[in-house]
Amino acid sequence: MARQTWGSRFGIIMAVAGSAIGLGNFLRFPVQAAGNGGGAFMIPYFISLLLLGIPLMWIEWTLGRYGGGFGHGTAPGIFHTMWQKNRFIKYFGIIGIFGPMVIFIYYTYIESWTLAYSYFSIKSAYWGCTDQSSMQAFLKAYQGLDGKGGCNFNPTAYFFFLITFIINLWVIYYGIRGGIEKLCKIALPVLFLIGIVITARVFMLGAPDAAQPAWNVKEGLGFLWNPQWQSLLSAKVWLAAAGQIFFTLSVGIGVILTYASYLKKKDDVVLSGLTSVSMNEMAEVVLGGSIVIPAAFAFFGPVGISEIAKSGAFNLGFVTMPVIFQKIPFGSLFGSLWFILLFIAGVTSSISLSQPVIAFLEDEFSLSRKKAVYILGIAAFILCQPAVLFLGKGVLNDLDFWGGTFCLVLFATIETLLFGWVFGMDKAWEEIHHGADLEVPKIYKFIIKYVTPVFLLIILGAWFYQEWIPTIFLSGVLPENKPYIIGIRLILLFLFMTLAVLVKIAWRKRKKELEARS
Ligand code: PFF
Image 1 (cartoon, rainbow, N blue to C red):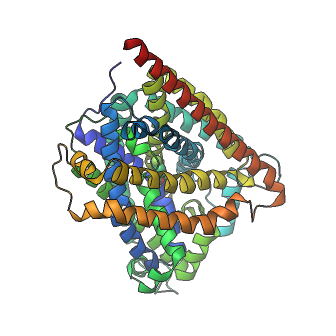
Image 2 (image 1 turned 45 degrees about the vertical axis):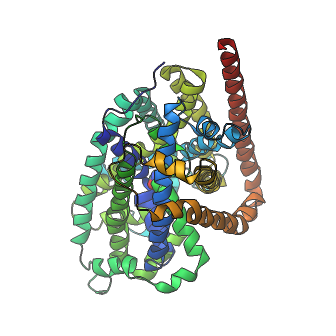
């Protein structure tokens, strides 16, 4: 069965940019930036972009295209092709299917809130919740967290989750060219357009509170952009910045590998990879940085914004912004535009998270796309339930830790070492430049071989010490939540083991076929 291919270069760039531009740009970035001191955050952020983000983007585009040439669209097959003598490397590749799946199961749920909130904005459903605390109560009620204990089931939230889930499956059902590419080619330009409209509206806010003239949009931008050199000494800020770069670019987890595996051998990866990074950064620092932060700053001031950012990951987007919309003319319209923007950004990202599983089933088991989508649909639907129903028990945060932190850094380290050291930098350099429209600056040969892996190993070590040990041993988890967290971890372990067994079966099958042929 011939593998699918992208229809056009514009198409794959839009698809990769669509994966990268997501809730991370508009919700996570402002929270990270404001919570880590605004300007203090941006220096480590840009250094991480140059030393981690861009190299990883090139590595994944190159390895994906390389693997696709051998009929593999996921890391087990790609890693094995690169290091055929090693029997175990394919099992490390499982992280590149497992990680995206883990992110998918909580990401889709958050994405569904944005759909619900666009509807609530059109309907002015939260009008009347004019301060932070009443808007917070509205969000909690929606999430089913209003204190009744047990499971957090709210029929309205579940309804929007179902619609979101079905939309995702529907797009991937139509495949790379007919589903993902078609959607992203329209969705991304629309997303930028809405982003520009909202940014323009925010810039017109000026200083909305006459009693606080220093609380204005210009100062809000300064809060994000005035560099603070002392942040270079804070390990916490560095970890947050590097983590944001991974998450926002969708690198280090296997998703871009899969997308790039549908390239043709002579397709360029250097310029295309760089273009997708640039688009993401434009959406993140220009649009993402010009909406929530200056608006929240203008209405709540520098202390207020930092406090809100620290009070919860979703508060700036789902609490502060709705409060602001109620204070401006045509707020219901701008509110719905904001949440539609988030929803579009979310869908084009979540479909990319589901594609590695699909590619794995198609490539390694020769399943039809239809069958692969059915299997993914059933498995993901079951796996989503704990995130939806036990949100208040910390299940979503735990999934985010394993998928969005742990797997990401681990997988990025493995693939970088494989690329620069096992594949070998000379061969890697040649592979990157196949069909390239642009030459990568020579310095990156050195960066990819030494700097990126050392940087990754330091992050891996620091994270292990600071976050992983406490998280792995459940410190800080309320005793009543422990059974839920242990439960979700057992489920994740089961998922990982299932994938390992599938890899084993696929390779045994392939070996038999090769023997029969010779
Ligand atoms: N990059 C997406 C965002 O910024 O929201 C999230 C994401 C998508 C992370 C795909 C990882 C991934 F593989």
